[in-house]
Image (cartoon, rainbow, N blue to C red; front, side):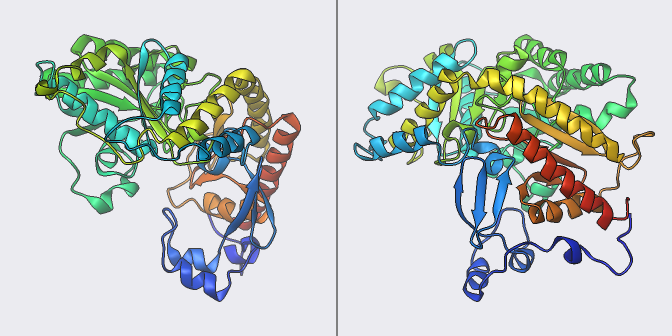
Length: 467
């Protein structure tokens, strides 16, 4: 793919605001996630405020936030109920001494999370975010097996193309090479199998692809030795693979495999949790109950750093005993179970339940899917996928042959710039982009969002010579 003669991305997609000299100096004193600082300084985007579906930069330009910050603000920015809950709790307590006790509001959150989680997943520990929840789940699994007579079970199996967090164990479980290779070698005991999206063109149907790929987990367990494998950790809908939604059968095969070999099934629902998929958790959308759910992002609607590990109640028995038994979970964080964050999480869940936002996500998701399908008229979209309001759109070079773009796909690069020019924030990879609008959106808001996407895509196509 070539740019139009005499043009470059800057000619078409230069961002809207220019950083001051002070801002440039300060940008060199920090890091922006996964971005080169020289690029950030050249094309600065510095936000000043946000409310509802929108963010504003320091020049006053408004952006439709189509991903809720980063798949977090499920109720939009500065939701009144969340802000009010935060204010009330700030008048009472913002930090309970974590080595000595627990906040009463944290117990309320534990109770509520247990009520809305599938099956008997009601053993809860909240943390400061998704990565901490993932780390805790893996430590929990290893200690559980040590204390139940199976000390050799320590390995975890996950997917290539997956992402489970930036801390070291979470990164070791991650299968997205570009996010982890710079920090190798990683921790031992982490194994990978291919994602169904990587093998889909080798089989006659998506169902057959999923069936084959799901059975790979059993092959790995057998070859490694079931006595050494502690868990399978998987995003029920994989973000960094391109919002890949597997079949129900795929996850059921994983559930059956874990049952057969006494392996924990851990769902990383940091991204999928809290109503996005049409249920409180994607586990409920698929009707599959894992042994542990790890959550984050939407639990606080982005208002505070927050996550939670939610495990089977019966597993807690392995951590309960006399003081001299020393079987308590050997894990903690200063802000785990934070009362201020707990008040916010409780408010988010109550808002979702009382306003039936799971049902809304399913209905609004169907409308969103239909609108996104309309973008196929440009001839560069292979498919729209996902569940509820969590949707991924994959680019393709040729819609007839389904020939993919090369990894240096410049359409995605151009879209990153034109989308900001047109005032919309998307999650964009070279060969796909994603949306997950906050659940305060209605159909007219979806119309506005997709219209902005279409304008941005049209200009990106022009930049790259596709029109």
